[in-house]
Structure formats: C-alpha cells, structure tokens
Image 1 (cartoon, rainbow, N blue to C red):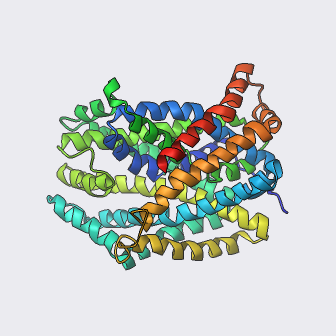
Image 2: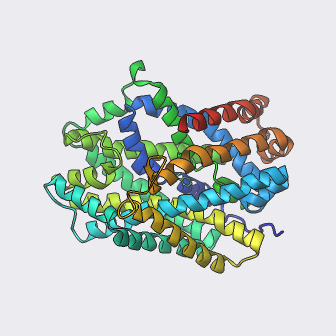
Length: 443
Ligand code: PHE
C-alpha cells in the first residue's frame, strides 16, 4: 500500500487550507441562524469554550494520526490502530463523500446567487419575490442539479490540480480575500441605524439564555465547524512536514474558524436588526433575508455581490477538503492517478447529489425518519457519522496509539507536562464522553 510523499508548500499554506476547510457554509450560513435560533450568546459562548477544549484536542489528534500514518484516512487509521480502526477510516472516507454530495447542492445555490447578483437580479422591495426565487431554485430538480454540477466542476477542477497547486494555492489567495470582504460588509452592516441591537443579541449574556439545548447544539456545531470526524484533518495531516508544530497550527485553525463565524454573525445580525427582520429566520436567512436587506440600502447591490463571493469562497475551500479525503483514498488504496480519481468522484458525486437536489421538489414526499433526503443526510452525517469518527480518533490517539500521539505533539517543541496531560485527559475521557452525548441527543 502506497503512502504519500506529497507535502504542503508552507506552514501558512497548510494553516490556511485547514482553516479553509473549517470555514465554510457552516460558519457563514449555519452559524448566524443557529445563533439566532438558540438565543445568541447562549450558543456562542459554549461554542467558543468547546472549540478551545475538545475541538482543539480532536483537531490535534486527527493531524497527529495523519502525520504518523502518512496516507489516506483509511491507511492512517489501519496503520496505527489495526483492522477495527481501518473500518472506521473507511467510514470516514464514505462520510466525506456523502457530505460532499449534498454540500455541493448548497454550493450550487451559492454559484447561482453570485451569478444572479452579478446580473443585478435579486434587488427587490418585496421579500415575497425573494422567497419565491429561492423556492423556485430549490424546488426545480433540474435547475438545482445543474447548479450543483457547476459547483462540483469547480471543486473537482481545483483538487485535480493537486495539493499544493490546487488546494493550497486556492486557500492562500481566497481566504485572506474572504476576511477582507467580510470586514467590509461587517462595517457596512454595523453602520446601519439600529445595528447595535444585533450586536447585543449576539453578545449580551444572561444565564437564562443558556439552555441545555443551546449547549448541545453548540457542541454539535463545534464538530461540524472544525470539519472533525470525517477524515479531512487526518488526510491533511498526512501532508505535514515533520517540522510543523501541530498544536500551534491547530490553535491557529481553531482561532480563524471562530473569528470567521463571529465575523459572519457581525455581518448579518446587525443588518437583520437594523432592517427589522427576524433573526430566527432559519436557513432562509442567507438566501432570502440578506438579499432583501441589501436591496434596501444604498449600494446594496455591490454588497450583495461581495456577500455572495464570500459564500462561494467559503463553500469551495471546504468542499475541496472533503474531496481530497476521497482522492487520497483512491490514490492510496486503488493506485489511481489524481486526474482519474477526480473524474470518478465527479461522476459519483454528481449522481448522488442529484438525489439531494431532487428531494426539495419531486421527491419531497420521500421521507426518512420524517426528513426529506437532503435533511436526513445532513442530520445523519452531522449527528451520527462525524461524532462517531471523532470518537474513534479520540480512542485511537488517546488510548491505542498514545505513545505515537505524544511523540508527534512534541516533535517540534516540547510542550509542558500540563499541556500534555490536558490533551491526554481530553482525548481519553472528555472528548469520548461529550461525543457520546452529542450522538445520544442527535438520535
Ligand atoms: N467546516 C465546514 C463548514 O463549517 C463544514 C464541513 C464539515 C466541511 C465537514 C467539511 C467537512 O462549513
């Protein structure tokens, strides 16, 4: 079985690629509406705490397993953990594939919205028109599938170029651009009269906002937002040089992920409150409420374009990471060339994604556990498969291969005994316990 010889071009390139995976539609689309539904700070504070405790230790664990295993997620888990863990590695690859199939449908909406905003459409005084535009897009299986193909083409094109020339280069240019655009939109949003209500909503803390449900949701979101449990960071870890300090790089990735989610909140909520819109609007917040808000403000069309660029960039830097998990697997286990692996994945993902795309329209009657197919896949992957993947990584890195974990963590710089004990304790007890709670509540 071949192991990988590819390495990242630079440490910063790797951090941006890792952060690019973490920063996705989850940060920009899911975070503001989840914060909205869960009462703002009652969600944000636990999310930050979870990210800097179990989130970061699991991130370290995945990267460490990847670098020690040097290969696809399946290869790395098998190498360190034997046959049982190799099954978990295989499941992680499958999870990435399935997530990408439906993630790409939402990515397709981003391409379409960017296209429409460039053509000056979406500017209207009537929110019902925007609701209808969105409804027509998702409800029409053919249109929905075609946009999904367009996004998939972009994703496969980047990954086919390779780790350094494709993924790393994309993240190095687009992520800093994303931060700048988000800051510009945030300033515009904060400058609207009444915007401070939105800031208060996000950050004003009182204990009655902290509910059991908001804490659990924050825990699930931590997983999703750091792209944990589906082999991404294991795969990215395999491309790390021995001279890269994993804990330090992980801190950077977690920090950038949180910063972007907060920026997204500050870009959206102040505008929502200033324009008297509903912060609990759910998934439609980004595709209906935001275009409506931008339609109302001077030069809003310009901000609408910038906003849609942000969405697309975020979606793309995450989707390439999901695809890389599958490509590394096909290269390692089936000795395929990158190009052929990309084409094969394109075909498979295009077909599977159509199932999700159709589930909003003609197949909306098909329900699994009371959910349409798209929602079921999202629920199943986020609440069951990703946490299970996280659990197996915690058990592998914390128990079975702790010696290797310890060596990898301290390879570049010797961390203090208390830092090492914290990582060990978190991987052995804290992370498995919290993951089980996420799975139990998800079910
Ligand atoms: N972290 C990504 C986001 O926040 C989502 C994602 C999950 C990407 C799992 C890859 C894997 O959008």
